[in-house]
Image 1 (cartoon, rainbow, N blue to C red):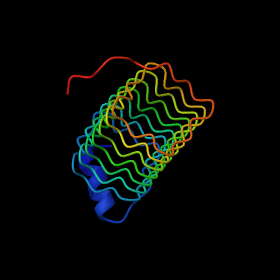
Image 2: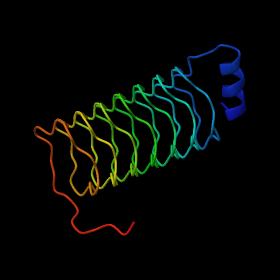
Image 3: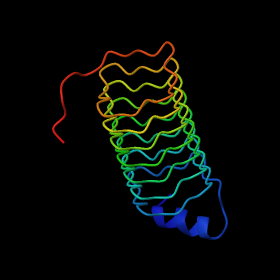
Image 4: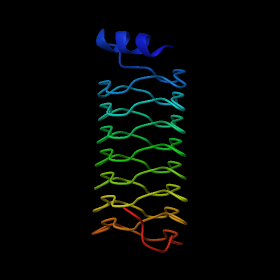
Amino acid sequence: MTSEELLRQYSEGKRDFSGAGLYGAKLYGASLYGADLSRANLSRANLSGANLSGANLSGANLSGANLSGANLSGANLTGADLSGADLSGANLAGANLSGANLSGANLSGANLSGANLSGAGLYGADLFKANLIRANLIGANLSGADLSGADLSGAKLTRAKLSLVTGPKND
């Protein structure tokens, strides 16, 4: 499926794109509010600035995707592969990322307030100045993650692995 086909079908009212093959899709700035993209292949897709609030991306492959500045508030990303994805400045408030793979992802400046990251793999993730207020990080793997400047007020860190990067960040 091409980016153009997806946007056309979405504008015509279709919302179920589960399992769609959208490798490298150019969907920057697209409005896909509430779309079902579960198990879709969005690897290397450009979704920067896209509105995916309330979308179902459970089990989706978003490895290496550009989601910088995207709105993913309330989205379901359970078990999604976001390894190496750019989520800098993204809004993930209240999103469900339980069991997601976020290893090596760039989440600097992202809003993850109230997000569910239980059991998520955040190995080597960049969480510089991320908002993790009241986030659920129970059992998450934060080994090697950069949490400098991150706000973890009220976050749940029970059984989380916290082998952190040390030293100041040049920003």
